[in-house]
Length: 148
Image (cartoon, rainbow, N blue to C red; front, top):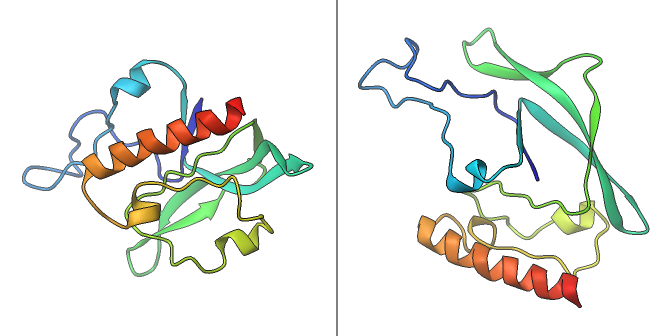
């Protein structure tokens, strides 16, 4: 399992950029992270590569955030930083906003079957307990689908 994040890796302790009482942007590890798998930071997904409708790889590039003229950070791709991750399943865990239902599947020319949604993507921003419950239900549905 590889988890990629478009944002840079957060600090492991409170830095001078986030003195109290500012909310600290800290690296958080859950029990699932402790079980194993890889995490990679400042990665932008460019495209999914597949064969006969089955994903095989994810094409990625490294990104950096620089302060723009207005002081707001701007994301920029790092030249010659392209790489691929082998994959046989991709789970998009984006959070917070419900998709409006327009265009996403059409952009991928995806048939609207065997596609699983849960949590914020399905119900909209809600409580973490709903996301956990829906994640479990989606995992069961995916498991049943893969087992046939």
